[in-house]
Length: 310
Length: 325
Ligand SMILES: Cc1cc2nc3c(=O)[nH]c(=O)nc-3n(C[C@H](O)[C@H](O)[C@H](O)COP(=O)(O)OP(=O)(O)OC[C@H]3O[C@@H](n4cnc5c(N)ncnc54)[C@H](O)[C@@H]3O)c2cc1C
Ligand SMILES: Cc1cc2nc3c(=O)[nH]c(=O)nc-3n(C[C@H](O)[C@H](O)[C@H](O)COP(=O)(O)O)c2cc1C
Ligand code: FES
Image (cartoon, rainbow over all chains, first blue to last red; front, side, top):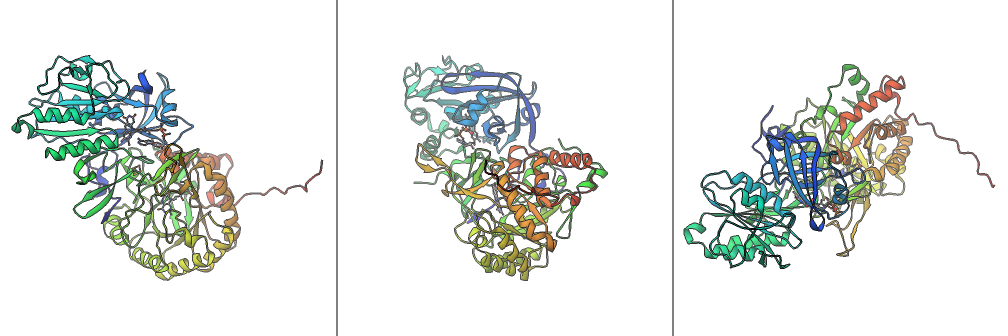
């Protein structure tokens, strides 16, 4: 049994002593101006925030902990979807779930939001695997967009994004210009932003949306993997964020195809800096079960540690 | 952003607590700041802004703690049921304390156990360490054995304090539970048993229900309520314990829902020599320098040169006899 609250070493500007002190001053509190706040269907919103210190350091998988409003003083964790270090903005996509996000939805362009970020261990793609498969479900889509953004300029990397939603997607889907062999006919709907970056994407839903695959993200992922030659399959690495049940299915699929898989998890949070142990998940380690903090030990974990073999 | 304090401000804020010099009356509370380094991740946060930092509740053997969900926001407060997740006293002393910078602030261990012997053992391990003081947590509502089961019974509380007293000569601070009938009687017994100070109060037991699932939201079903919602209760308990303590010169760390300098001042006036900051850090990780500045401002406005002059300065109203009209 291992149980720790000991910070894990992170690649960060070291200051002072070694060990625990290496991570000092790596998170920033910013009063971020709302540059735009765009509503979409089904209570989904995109926020663009001016937060230059966070934008400069954000990585795919990292998140911010933000104050929604005075009536709900506990912060809410939300993933960073895009970060522009040059212009100092970050994008967030969120869905109204309860009182905190409902307060957030009332905040207007020009107002300021109090943010802490960028928090968490980001995704760490294996440079040897040139075919990343990005799987996002619902409001688990944002980290996949960020990952795609960082991958699209890397030579020799050819990602595929499979994005699923049971409410209308928070963007206008368009027919893809990029052909992906092995997918069922008629599955052509894509996310325009990824399309602009030259990254193929496909959408899935069980709601019958035009051009989308009728089924789960894992069904479409399986169809694609089945169609790949064995050598190509060995170059795949899976990245996923979404509802727990989806992540469990993705992890099972990855295990079946013997693919490495990194998942981004959610848990209720208080501090989001590793101080309260409020956000833990149980993971499997060589020394037995351990409780790891989603905020600073995650949110990205190796799927094999989270979902043990059935 | 932390503004460096002037030496005048520092002098006003400096406090003595159980023989320790504290740079400011603020104490970061157990369970909210891990083992002392977690919040230093935040640029602008410094342990130098507080007089002391209480480390996470520590037991003899490592504990995995409770299943999720462990935290949940409630109106002006939160529930937590962490279940004393910690790597065990030996690990804390051998691997964590050597990494802490004792020039920045005082560090206080928070000791817990399921038996009186365990409290003794853990205290003994911390006694042989650079830790500045030891807080006895007989008020944790989130573990099945020990914790609040000791804290709600004055006899048991006294036995735990006695055992810890035998294990150390370091300052001992007993953390009292609000979940009991007569906190003043308990305090009296703990003073007899040898405590040097008190922390008042720990969390109150509470519950939240998920009406869709018809289950408690918290994995442990019930949890400890903290934050502004408990402040009036905490203030009254500090006032009651202070009545017992003042004759003995035993100081109190007042806590429970302190978010602003005004909150902190209320506790000091009610009898607290130091004030704890827990849940407020979750709201604003840079809250401590703001509270320090607010206290300095208050002292200056009232021509008070040091905090000790304010401690317990509460003037009670004399209620008029009831009128029948
Ligand atoms: C690392 C991380 C990244 C996230 N990224 C996104 C994102 O990009 N977009 C998005 O829409 N949502 C995201 N979430 C989920 C989001 O934090 C919750 O939907 C939100 O906290 C709900 O708050 P509420 O007050 O509206 O809901 P309520 O149900 O009223 O919340 C009550 C309490 O439960 C907590 N809570 C409820 N559901 C969740 C949840 N799923 N995760 C964490 N805490 C929860 C809240 O923080 C709050 O303390 C993320 C969560 C985590 C942990
Ligand atoms: C997440 C969390 C964990 C806590 N863990 C401990 C603990 O391990 N030991 C302890 O004595 N008190 C613990 N407490 C209680 C606090 O130290 C403090 O007494 C209480 O929260 C009241 O202060 P506040 O309202 O300012 O938070 C914990 C509180 C919270 C919110
Ligand atoms: S939210 Fe406090 S440790 Fe993760």
